[in-house]
Length: 107
Image (cartoon, rainbow, N blue to C red; front, side, top):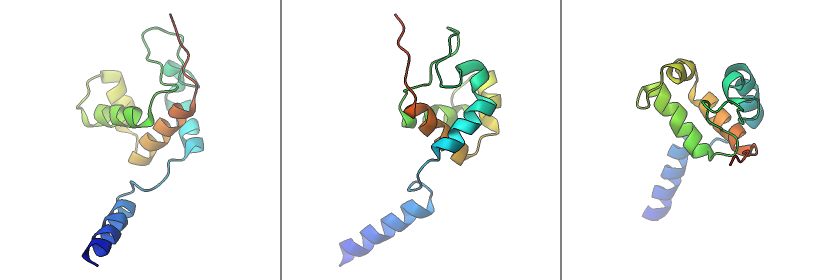
């Protein structure tokens, strides 16, 4: 019985914390067009060599990178400014959107 109560409480905490909520890929696509496309391309496949390709990256990697830019744990003046205005939902949505895009391979 104790294990059931612990499992139920853990599940409830997960939902309350927002970790159990699914990302909104369409919202991520919209935000990407407003915020990211100028440098990273509409689908996350920038043709400029100085801007990383985001398309096809793992969503957890992208979310961590954006969160780190926002917190200052990862340093880049431009990305820090861009990430500063993003909400947690924006970050999750952007990460989910770019993860669904094809990554262009370069040689």
